[in-house]
Length: 234
Image 1 (cartoon, rainbow, N blue to C red):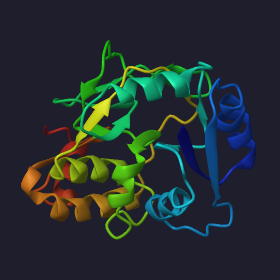
Image 2: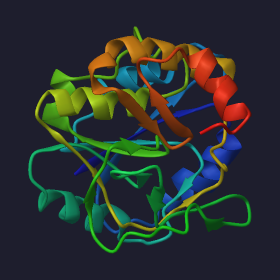
Image 3: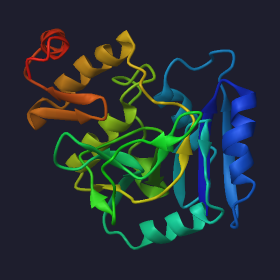
């Protein structure tokens, strides 16, 4: 069984997308909702860790409130897919492999369009994952929850998890699944860069932090890389 864990701040969107599509699934599941309409939680890591404490499933599915599972067998087929993988640390539906390209079969936006022209025919090992959907085995998450200290806002907690779990000898995977994400997912507030600077220190030895919003060297200050990217010097 899968436990779907969602932090929400808009009940209307939650009900119209995630809850509605989950109600059509053809297998049993557990839904854990963390109400953050009053801003009780200041970070995704703290809110999701809180929700995970209530979960009992074999896999924890951390989903945004505006996810639409377009296939009624999504939970069943995804669990079967993951069961066939080895050494699983975390699984996502959009991300990067070994280059700067974002790969995904999902769609996004109010009038859904492809997230990326680069499609997946089969499951791949991932170098980073988008946070719209993250799936983590229960036994892995119990030992390795999200990092609330370094990821203390709403950004990059999935990126950090991929890097951290690889250091533990586990693998990150990108699966060729289909679903819809209402948001265009292009949010990059100053909090993004603050967290990125922290992750540079935490993962300095990796040399490069890949994200779906760009790749960042760990040994060059973020402000310099932002300036370079702004003027498209690399």
